[in-house]
Amino acid sequence: MKSNHFLKTLSSKSSAYCISLHKLSSPMTKGSALLALATTLSACGSPNQSQTAALDSATDSTAQVSQSSGTQANAPLNQTQINQPASTLLQGVSATVYKDANCGCCTEWISYADKAGLQSTYQHPQTLSAVKDRYEVPEQMRSCHTTVTSDGFVFEGHIPAKFMAQFLENPPNDAIGLAVPSMPVGSPGMEYDDKFMPYKVFQLNKDGSYDVYASVDTPQQQL
Image (cartoon, rainbow, N blue to C red; front, top):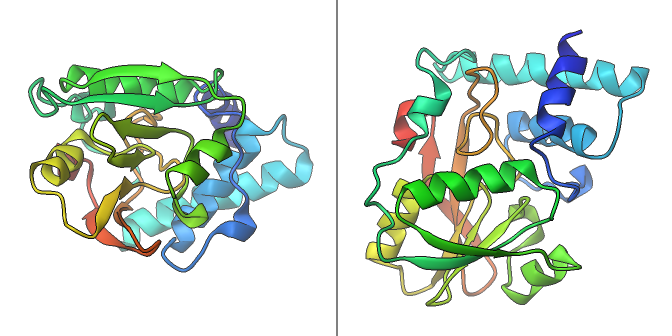
């Protein structure tokens, strides 16, 4: 029951773009990899018995990861309220969001970013991976949508508005943007039942490398 409900909810938010687990690399935590598994199963179709068991393991392990880092899986505050940004964070920033036409969580992230002041348009490219290739997003850093600002900076996935604004205020010379790999539960646009999974925001560098830009260990750190 727990897995089926989780799948049904996330499937309405997830993109048809499926994350391949064999592409996950060392920057991804064990919890992130397990969450990617859960998201992939929900995006790629109805689960069979073995997939349901895998999802049970993934959600249970996600809770353990949250508890081990001092963060409870059930966030003490309403997650939707936590992810409502101030309306001026991205004021004056315009961007195009490239996403799958059926991606519900992408649409929710756009709504979130627009409330932060982002002036966004969106496109549904025939091949989303080609867009990510064009903007040199490493495979290990990819998520369900790619946002490109009018001045060419790339923001991959469910990034909190505060980190986008912080980056754009003083872009590092060697960076092309930021990324939140996979689709962490509790990140902006990926709210589910007030649950939260710690995740990292990565800086994407011009040479194809990436570094940790920020660690988000609690829902409050997204504000």
